[in-house]
Structures are given as C-alpha cells and as structure tokens.
Length: 158
Image (cartoon, rainbow, N blue to C red; front, top):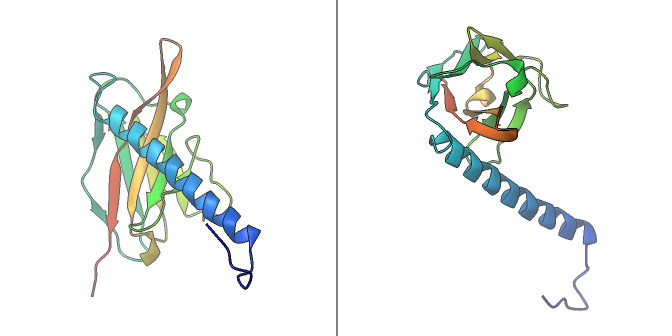
C-alpha cells in the first residue's frame, strides 16, 4: 500500500490492525476446534444443557452444562466465554472459578451436581449474550477439547 507524503504514518494504528487480524484468526481456529469436538467426532460423549434461560434485571440465573457419560471435575479446567453478537467472545471464567481481570465478581463459576455451572448474580441488561462452555480432558495422554455449548440469557423487553 502506497502512502502519500501528506498522509501521516501511524505505527500504533498498524499494530492495532494487525492485532485485530491475529485475534480474528485465533478465534476462527478456536471456534473450528469447538465445532469439531462438540460434534462428537472424538467420542460418544454428548454435552448436555438446558435450553435458553431468562432472567430479569437484578435477578440471578445459573447456566449449566454436563456430559452424557463420565464426570466433570476441576481437572477438566472448565471455563466460560460470553459472546455478544457482533463482538469477539470474551473469556469470563477459567479454571472452574477464576476471573480474568476486569470481569465483574457477579459472574461465578463452579461445579454442581456433576455439571459445570455459570452463575450470574445481579444480572444487568448488558449480560444478554450467548455463553460458551469449554472443558478439557485427557485421553491417551493428549489434551483434548471435549465439547462446547451455547447458552443464551434472554431479557424481557418492554
């Protein structure tokens, strides 16, 4: 791309653009892996989940995801991503219950009744999103992603 003498060059802008491209490619790879393993390619184990859930602002909702066979444990290092349409997914929980910096404490992760759970307390309208679950397990000494599940928290609209 040619740049005219009158157009200033902003290396910072270029770095931002390159970062966006790298992130987009990384998410594309992650989503392809999620689709491949979530489709049952690796085993007969199926991810179980409830349908979309609704919560009123200020309320509490718990999203869960389990396995049709086997058990879920902290060794699976379950985590959750929040995906708002038009934006890249954002990691909100990792290693069962840890938060990345900047994620509000009202998002909490746990394992309950052999299912991975995400609880949102004091729900806000901006929490309306799809929630993606990921879990890792060890099979023949290889680390594999066993599945993913999309959750939608729907809000009553006036």
